View 1 (cartoon, protein in one colour):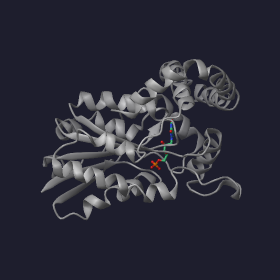
View 2 (cartoon, rainbow, N blue to C red):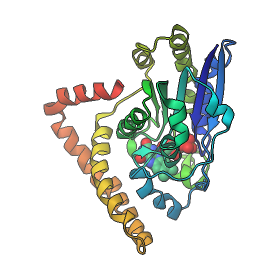
View 3 (cartoon, helix red, strand yellow):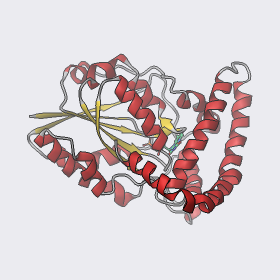
View 4 (spheres, rainbow, N blue to C red):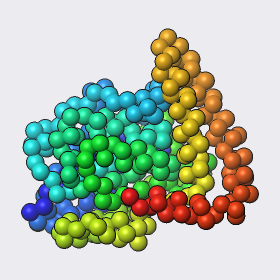
Length: 300
Ligand SMILES: Cc1cc2nc3c(=O)[nH]c(=O)nc-3n(C[C@H](O)[C@H](O)[C@H](O)COP(=O)(O)O)c2cc1C
């Protein structure tokens, strides 16, 4: 019998759906026992979001400052697992506060040590640097990252910004104004996530995860878009300055978060199109370097 622990947190239920489909081939196998653990916060984040809560989550998300979570049950903590499937979403270019809080808790220390882990990301489209942060969190727990799957919104960047704002602030994963595409990961990709479960099951049964990431990549588990990686890197530099500045502003935090809101709007709608044009112009000269680097992000 193989024991698998599926850990996740999801506000809209998107990540829950992804993981439910992904684990279908495992849950239908008599020799595999799946335990589910949903991370619960002591103080829950609102969904749908309001503007002030959304921006208020920025400094702690980016600086990866943990918040209090409810303790998992002893039944979850006492078992030994052959595999952990960890679903997470990205908040402000970092693993979301609930997932970061769990991974920095004493509970995670108990569960993750020397255990193979597959990360499953359900994000808008900017997750590459968050996964680098995830690698550090997992290495601190002495866990073994053996696979990564990243499911994202495949629409062009600015369209996905408009549609995710509609989704996050209305709570409805619907077509904004009836003309925009639906936000988030597409229904067909969510449904097809079971294809990953099949190769994961093989590795689990063979007790060999060495080739798992290569097998997952053959199934398009990860797509790297060079422009998004460049934006991710640039935004990380700016977010570092903003978050360290705002975290110290105890009395004027609300004001500075409003300024950050304006900055973010300018960065997305005015600066990023310029960066995109520059990216296209310099691309032919740095294509080989980018290709090499992006190949690394696909691996573990
Ligand atoms: C506060 C906040 C910040 C987010 N920041 C990012 C981000 O930096 N990159 C990204 O790709 N998605 C980002 N997203 C989208 C989430 O990763 C995720 O796709 C969405 O919240 C749905 O997740 P759910 O399963 O919890 O409902 C953000 C969402 C929220 C609420």
